Length: 183
Image (tube, rainbow, N blue to C red; front, side, top):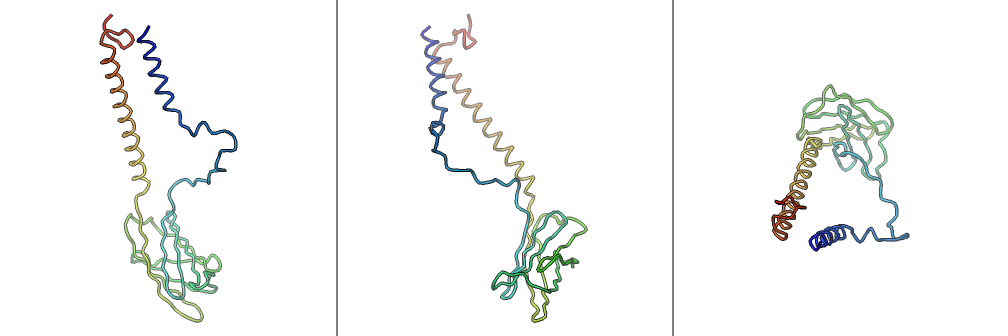
């Protein structure tokens, strides 16, 4: 009976240590609504800046959306013509509104760094912008990282469980029926 009480006390101690003090907070002790979490990684993007213009490109699969603004006040550039060269190839663009352009590529870009050259032509000036689009294989690396972390936690839990069983067998001897010893 004494061994059962010791096992019960050990189990209650482990359970008590597992309960964190944050779970004891009463009403009015919260920190407000949690900020909204976005799922997945951000789309790859690039920026090319000069004294006059700022160009930002956002890649989503085969579609590239470009935003052209004045550097001084961040306002869209009206009636601009934009020519784009990406990874050594000229990309045809369609205007979607003031300072916004869209390109649909024939195939997705492979992972790596790709040079971006853009020529901006307006009624007052012409400018050349240069940037770099850096693509990574994010989905695959995130999946591997998640799997590795899960395996690490599972291995750690297994080691802790083995140490607890080993300690209990050592403490109470090998003949305890609860631990699977000889009867």
